Length: 177
Length: 197
Image 1: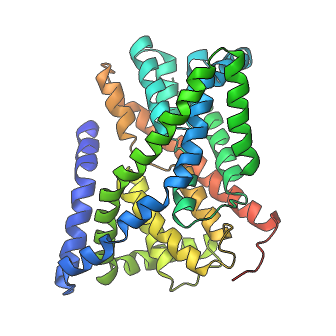
Image 2 (image 1 turned 120 degrees about the horizontal axis):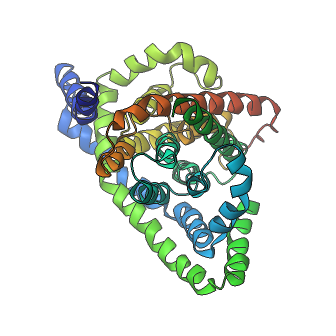
Image 3 (image 1 turned 90 degrees about the vertical axis):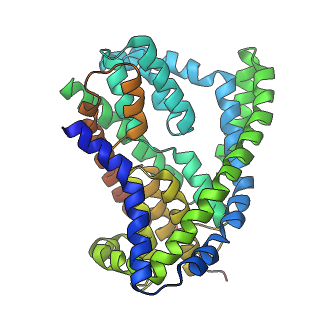
């Protein structure tokens, strides 16, 4: 029952928003087609503008992932995290989730497929991936779109919040499963 | 950011060399650059679509209405932003889209809010407090239902995938509240922006 409700919400959220916006627009006598195309014409410009910022961040992170540093860090952290009842398999998820959303989902899928649905690691990884956003990507896209190069405290706040998220995920998972 | 950029690249090369993966690291430059352009180009269409829809929402007064509803909260979070600014409505839409897991809609709307914040920014090269707050809200990744994760769990035959929704929601709420709190604290102690045109 709950499951079907969730599915309905996921399925209908987007179409419902679009229908509401268009209907209210029509009722308020907004020239829909004209207004839409007028707003849409900035899309290309914005997307192209963020390319330099994306290249800087994505190239640096691709290099980091290829270097094997993430595996090395996982190895180094394993004994410490074992103490807190954290399976070693989930460590790459913690490191990667601030860097690349696709990679985090990939690592999570690996864990899920290799360890199966009953493993504690699968649940912990699911919660960690489900509750995170790719900090570096968001930073590059949002600041890139307005050509901001000095981030001030934005990155530090993002990373501290990511860390708190990891600790919270471990604690909640420990309590519930 | 200068140090982080330097650190990421130089460390990758050194560690890659130690691990004997230097050629992989070099190849990653090419594949990373290619991926960046792919990501940006894949954004063009959806960016156009949501900017168009948002323009209609704006003209019909919907954004303004949403802004009014959340004003009691945003008033405290975005102190520097004038109450009648269109950025407030966009920020509310950006948050709602994120919460519903509509990343494709959230990003263009967030960027639109960013542009308005930039217009109000006194130093165009550095991030204003309001921008840092918007970033904090977005990097924390608040989401009601983690749809992709649930899809993966269903794929491996997880019996009751919805049981992770509640713990995930709890964690994401903790993260979100921490992010905006920390951002507020940093706002007070960080060196203020310089005035420029």
